[in-house]
Length: 203
Image 1 (cartoon, helix red, strand yellow):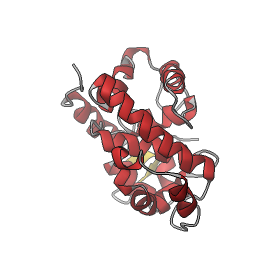
Image 2: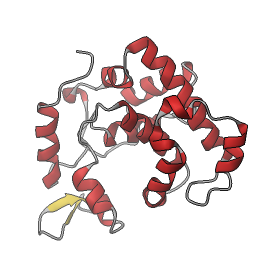
Image 3: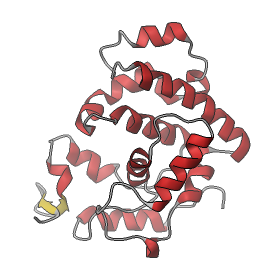
Image 4: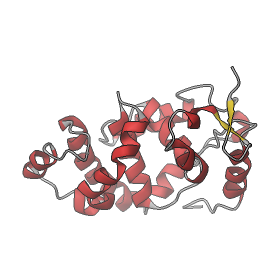
């Protein structure tokens, strides 16, 4: 099976973006482009945690509702949430109503504060885990990597929840720590160019 599909403009793209109509814009404008904004990094890691056991289509459909529920993923504000907020969110039909995942976001907001205090920013921490391109295999051939395993292990040690190696690898793909667009995908070149011009945080 080919790893690409033809987009509406006749150009080739990663096959997965043809699975649902809303995937195309996400694939073309977000997935794989490097991110250094702490709030966006925190949001994506939380959304990947919400996706655990579900489809990305479900999360993408609820993304705006989840953003609203968690105050735009302002982790300084989310860290102040208590049990009454958990109970309130469990009744919110605009999000994934899973107690463990909701509590994980609140917990991870507190861990994010600790990490920022220690590292200066989430971006400085996460981008230290950018793997050497030469050490990577072909794009989209795995759901984890040695780097995602290492990052997952460290996050868990620091008290983060719902950050298994597969979740972390998906986060790394989406936030541009790796360029996992397949070789023939038209967006791969755009991402490669964005990565070349990207100033790595903390370096």
